[in-house]
Amino acid sequence: MSFQFVGNYKCLDFINTEVLVRGKPMDLLNSFEDLVVWMVVAGILNEAEAGQVRTNWTNFSEVENLLIQAKALRTRLREAVKDIIQEKEVPEPLVTEINSLLARQTGYAELVRTRGGGFEKRTHASLSEPIQMLVPLAESFADLLCYGDLTLVRKCENSACVLHFYDTTKNHTRRWCSMEVCGNRAKAAAHYLRKRTQTDRP
Image: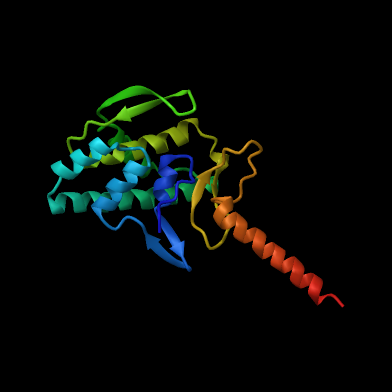
């Protein structure tokens, strides 16, 4: 299964690397390489930085430990997002962990042109230790807490889906992780139910 980028915040997309397939949990990050590939696709690392990471960090225990740390952070972020949706406080230990990661930030920002003719600020990380790969995720969560409207953090309404997203639609009426997947399934199910009801009428 491919990575899903429906969250509108990198921290939410990171949470969404654990999915349900036929009702069973599936982890899309099964190796350090999976984590690197996800970060490239997510725009956290560019190809050159990913190559540097692959070349510099070949110690198995070192990269395996980073994968464990990344998954542990993902779990805590998911629980915090659930708390946000239920209008509960973000746990203080997570705030401390986020601040600890932010303190490791290194690198520089660059202004780049986008395809649409606008601009975006892109951060280039100076990675001297593996744990710094998780800093952009901490930044994303910090941005969500500081600048986002937390009432727009949602879980897909499909009970068989565990994906989360930040609703950026104009009227804030988004219900599904994506219309192509869960939205169409819901429509098809509702259509089937309507036809069944009509057929069952005397």
